[in-house]
Image 1 (cartoon, each protein chain N blue to C red):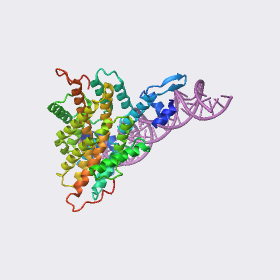
Image 2 (image 1 turned 120 degrees about the horizontal axis):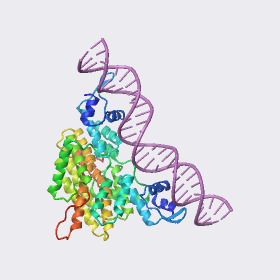
Image 3 (image 1 turned 30 degrees about the vertical axis):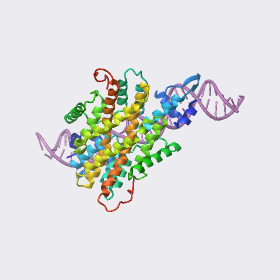
Image 4 (image 1 turned 45 degrees about the vertical axis):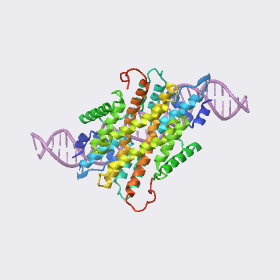
Length: 221
Length: 221
DNA sequence: CGGAGTGGATAGTTCTGCTATCCGCTAAGG
DNA sequence: CCTTAGCGGATAGCAGAACTATCCACTCCG
């Protein structure tokens, strides 16, 4: 298959495919002549993966490349690969982390990890991201979520166990890791959207509680 | 308090505050003279809210403005406000939604909502976002997450119930709505990071299962 | 009274994620 | 064999987002 066909099947415009090739997100096709190359199904799948990471997962182009690089490295150390992928999908911009308050919040996060007996590398970006969220909530005097932190962690553990368990059917370690990463990125997008729906439903329930009869659904989405 | 003090207390540079004023994210201070204005604590809090939405929640500047606008509108129709806020934090770019496959996936989402008895406005962007994620997973032939969709929805419902329940202590409807929105945006960032930690722990558990003795934590985050 | 700081306006910068154009070449139909 | 659509590779251009810098007249404080 040549580039036009790849574009047709994937829905990605040719100039964009060329751009991804330049950015090394997509491996070059097998050259059949000086200016002809052949792309296979693995290129098509990779292209779909790239678009899913970018469009659905909200990962940047550079982040997508790092995720793919991490996945295609030799799987001698899967934990390291997972770590690299997690770093790749972590946001580039973050709030100020130099305050005393933030450091204390981070310590509380490490404490939570310790209490749960979680095996976490202390330099994982996720630790800092938890601290960012908690610190922001604290500075806004929103303590409700902090009170429910343990329940949030419970739910996270439940989903993670579900995700990892689902990988057991995959024989190859490479496939398993890819599934974990997809679970992280696309699973997060999926869960966030489901949570918005649940928020909508729960809010509606709460608003109409005590009313004698049920009302029609809300007027605006 | 004048702009310099506001900048010092919030950690936001003066030119950036001016930019937010221009973009109408922040209300102008009370003018005391031709070129002097006075800012209060509400400006400081608003500024923290803006930075939390942008830096922690990953919302765009335009999205943050819409969220704030939705929150500060008259609370005669909280469901509409929530809907507007959800629209504001939804990503601008999304995958192609014109395929037959996508339409079928979306129908499955509506079916799920119906099965659960959720009261959801069918035009809610979250419906489409769930469909985006499911369609991407399907096209990548990753069916594991689809099989666990109900559990995902369970977890989402649990967290949402927790979030809404937590708002009951707030007397004012405005405060309650703000809490729901913060729960959506910052709670999502918080949960995503917790989930990454849990993924790390579960992966490590899985890798060392069956080994005779426990190993040191992974070498790279 | 003088210099740091202020509010408001306008212009410039950097980064990201594409698009557009050009060029010499290949491959397939007539 | 000849045309012509399409290809690959390279370079340049573009639009949006989120700031950042400069300027200016003015005001407040010591």
